[in-house]
Image 1 (cartoon, rainbow, N blue to C red):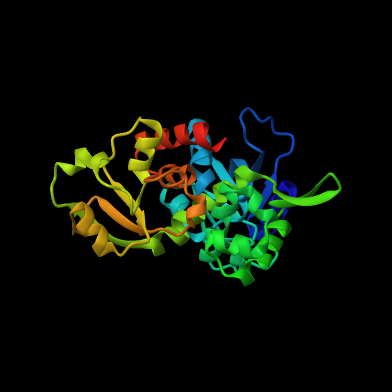
Image 2 (spheres, helix red, strand yellow):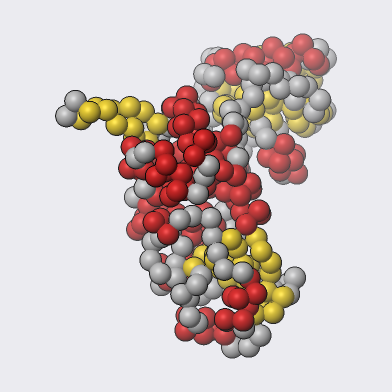
Length: 334
């Protein structure tokens, strides 16, 4: 939906449900990066809000929006076509006002309080979350983000490389086309597929990898039997596993000293435990994860592909991890 459509629909639905008057002030001078200004009236109470309009708010763009609001004084209202429930909870927790086109909202200002959370999202407002954004689709996307030329390989080759069932490949590609992430080009009178809006697709993959796929890959949490290995981890044999997360970032950038360790492997976890002397510990600093990609997508022995290391660190609460993730992006992701 276009911004003016989102604004009009949200205003109309909110006013219909609450009886309050919400209207845009088109002649208001915008002295900051706000998209527009609205005035909310209920009885004798009037409040004006700077407005940020988004189609959707997702985890990867939430921090930027919150930073903008924090830096700019005044009352703000986020107006969106759709906001996922976890993001709504986060906004409410931070006392950030929001309004969906369905009418769901959290608006709290002096003398005013609206909280609506029971309005159904219509098909028009539902985000496209088909099979592509489930576990198999996330594995498929990882493959084409690492190796775009796979899009022009036989489906059987794509299925083998991404470890996805053959019958899913066609529907996944069609869904990418529908969402404008894959387009058809032509060179020397031959048609080929290529990724459009690659950074946007990558950001969506990162968000869904962390929330949908990654939790399913975890095999357990452990610690080193010998504590000194925390500082000598680079000397461990890594022929049967791949370092992810912080140790991968350390190897890729020489900028980080790992405090939490992630290991991806296809071997049984008991074999890895024996190999590098690990013991189970729910409070440990080592996670063993299932390796979900084919060897054809390997980056180098002992390290996960840079995209995966970046995805694991970019949303970390640790600023050093996020800074390291940015270094990976600049050097390896282009």
